Length: 272
Image 1 (cartoon, rainbow, N blue to C red):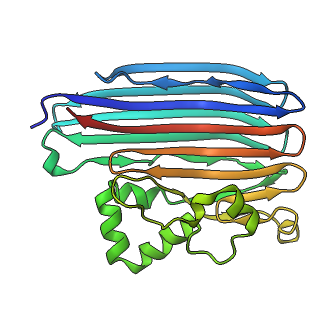
Image 2 (cartoon, rainbow, N blue to C red):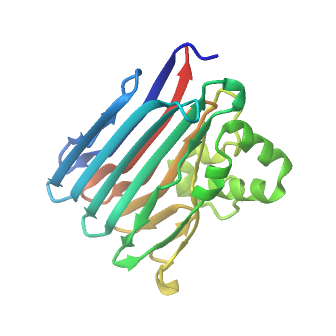
Image 3 (spheres, rainbow, N blue to C red):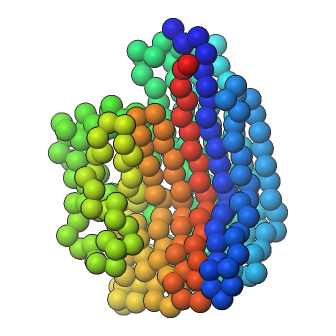
């Protein structure tokens, strides 16, 4: 029986740093953390622009945690919604939602659940082209804890193939520039207990015209745009107790140069 439960849920609407032609940190926007005792919190930022490089119309975050008498569980949610996203006119979206919900039964033997269901993109455009994103939120809503993921990976060849592709570990078309930028791509799909497993929820990216794929090379969840930088979509991390998602990240490789992250949510919880 859990005598005391420590909640954890956090969000960040946007954060980043520009390194050229000047060096300046982008203050974290719509950033929230739930107290260990639970409760409720909201944050909202409107009409944000950072030197015209990163901009959005609004970012609204919510964290909440409480005990459910009906389900006899400690439940928490972290969600952040960004509307009107605009990164140098090259990456735009009407809406980006990151969401992590967790449930820990009062009796730990019943198993916990941490799910990214409800995370999505609406009208995401890259270089003016509407991008269709197929996210595996359904898979990781069903496999809602690390034990289920490991069992499925060992016993279900179809899931093992899917996860290998989501990590890029099982792909033969990963170019050298990606391996240099993201060393974790070389790691096994399932990390050892107690370590971090990182991958993306992107099953497939559609909508980029075939004639432009040489200009906008796409591998898994990563798109490289010459003269702009590298775009990474819906990166997801898991440990035995926690999950987090970052919906969109850019590594600006031209000028301006720098990094930005949009839509991060994380959650877990523990007894003790």
